[in-house]
Length: 450
Image: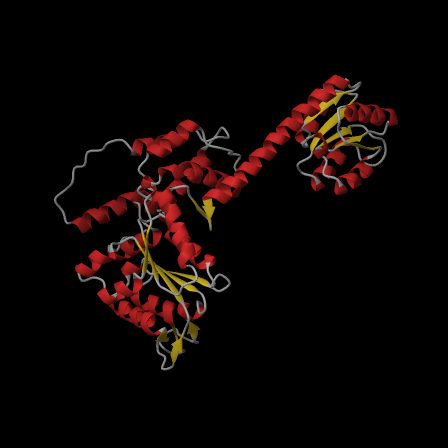
């Protein structure tokens, strides 16, 4: 361990460099010395020092604080210990504020130095082991941004590898927020189309006319405002993959158009007369049971069978609870970094709350819940109190259901969710347990302003 952690001593007094270097070498460490700040920085550029002892007062050039800051520019993980003969509260505060890990007072005690170095290196060794373990866990439980150790999800990921290089259509079923787009990306990026385009189309977010133009493109003059020719998503995805999200919401006309593309790999732009051929892998996703939609006459049976060549059914988060700690840790690390919040973990009591919740909005809801907790967290680690509102949502409720049509109940639920979330679509969709594109579709259907 000692050979892997070189040490640098920086002091303008030769006797100090020689004596401290001798003490540390006796303990088995490799030690370099420098008589000024610039020499120390130059050495740090070529050697990854674990610890740097830096004298605070050095005449001419850089003082100890400046030297420490320059070293941290090239070696941010180096532990810098400031040496001073003039220990005051102000100097200590300044050193710590600028990034020093410790400061010691001259004359230095060899035994004290040995204990200090040993303590710092034990911590570094532990941090290094933790980093290695995290990488192993990441490799073990992460596949194309899908984090899981659930056996059913493992089977699904194995299937994505098996079918990745086929042209066969894939239908991904699952509740909103289960990660259907991530699975679609895993299929695309695991296969021979990975270098080509992956195009996403949300079928529920657009009207029939707009979705038709979005998928197939249009010719100049095809409709008012079509001032030039535009390629559709199928053309843009040529050679790659097109992901049709919420496929169960498309109109009968578009179902017929899509069936023709699946059968012939050819289509016309809106307003066009020239047929266009494409080589596109189609992956579709839905939170609906398309077999039931077929039985009820809302979805074409022939299109359903064309789409359902390879079916992947994603389990909801409540059926893969062993993934909740992994996902929660991932979201804490990523979101705290994105928001520049000093939140570095999640307490066992808080995890217990998350494990007990039913997660109607699945992984997307978990992500939103973690983000809210990080924003309101005050002590550097998410604890049970940060999720108290979630516990309230799990309490048994009695419902006084009025005698009104089901559609009206849904409309009222959407309006109530929007009011609670102050019009925030992302939070309202998570609370309702549906995709944002699905919520937009329902807002249009019920003529709800937001």
